[in-house]
Length: 263
Image 1: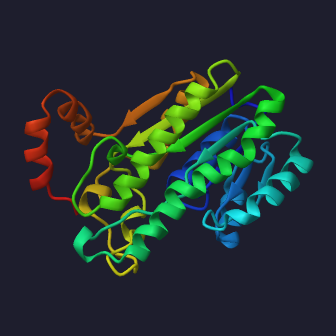
Image 2: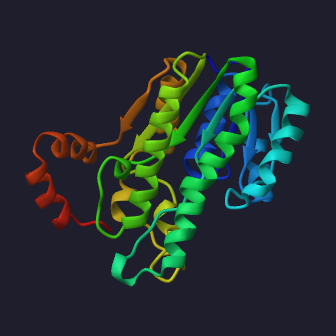
């Protein structure tokens, strides 16, 4: 689906990958619905978008799913359509499973998994009615394999793959597409905001994150994947080799991943 002139709803749009996507999509002529919990940050992103793009700010907490239906109806009344939904909002994790309170596990799943599928299910009937649309889920390399200190984060991303792969199969006779994006290390604040075992943010930048791909580069690759109807893309540096090592030499991969510096 070409993005020019389309209405694109981006969650987690106030920073990181979502912010970079906002600018790149606006530059390509897309109209935007920008969502996150932080109105002031969304206003700043809107101000930096290309002036030729229509931009709507919709404050949204993906953990508060009871609000989704009314918000979606209000947005459709204003825009007429939601052509592309990019489920980007999420939170990472840094903590051993044995030390992590179950409430933290539930919070991560509520944001990363249930928030994404609930919003998708809210928008889906309207796309079915028009027989047109595109769902994009921002997963992670750990949606393809597990990694120490990220047990529930990996679980939440694995769950996204199960849901969106299945949804794609259900929609194969329609004109609605589904794309999964699996980034490796991207230079954002995701590690600073990652939840530790007690639920508090880590507050520091991981070295691998600091040296990762720019979110601007990733945004261009995501847009290309949308416009070429890719089912799934894996994006990053040498860390992406983990996907292929696990597939073809799983024993070797298991030894590597348990000794990797996960910070």
